Image 1 (cartoon, rainbow, N blue to C red):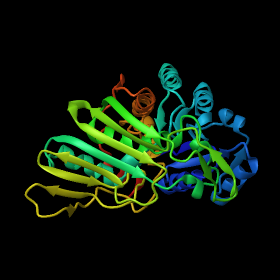
Image 2 (tube, helix red, strand yellow):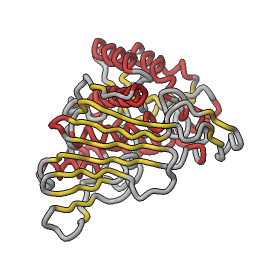
Image 3 (spheres, rainbow, N blue to C red):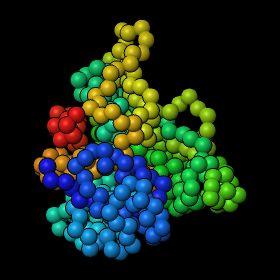
Image 4 (cartoon, one colour):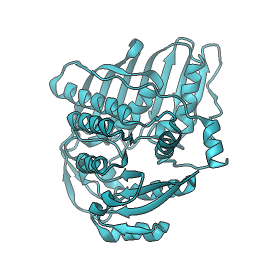
Length: 368
């Protein structure tokens, strides 16, 4: 198979794992990496033997199939639009854009130009959540009627090298880790119909203890504890709680309740965290379920780009799609509106049907 040519835009904290996995998959040629800090781009280029480290504006003129946008969220709209204007397919880190209006414009622009948009998170393509979907499809818990998702951590100011943007407008845990929760739940349960939510800023300032900004203070602009009630299609009732105020908890991950059993799915922020557990009502205890997984790797961020490359070349379904990301983004803004205005908020869009990964195809392509 001819290799898919890729350029990386943004060489910050998340870039190395993407590059490492794209090289592992073996069907990609990483032509260049770019960053506003050219020295940082040169460092990534040197570490992973990428041909060129370039200024960001040069990326749009490169001969590549896909541009992977790993820049901070506030830059996503402008960069994503320029990528599409240059005639290249786009894979963006989450969120796709900073507003629903911007995201809708980007999707319509891509459709008119015949280009494909993929978007993180792609953790729902990992073994744990794929296995959970198969169990639900095969009727192991009967018809689902409710779900809980708790993803709560201590703050990123303790470990992230540049945590300031995470506490600014339209970020916080809702827009930072909320996409992992909602993408997994939508994949498992279907589209969101309406939400109601509450949230608070627990600490008005955060003290940075990570390097290189140790000792700096961040003024918090977004709620750092958010809990939302969510009504999915088929009237499944869900609860999602995300926070950067809870360093210690026994509640982390997803539980799905069906008429015939309960399914426990690990933290959707990770590919390699925890086990899938199943208990049918006549079982004495939860049992671990062997996972669907053709890979031997742990953190597989970038798996969505592999699926996207196959979708472009082989006309197979696109799973971590811009359409799915749009529905999740609209849901996130509905939650934010609800907690601000203290009311139920409807979600207008529908999520696309997302099939399970084609394990046979992946094994063939990757020679596993």
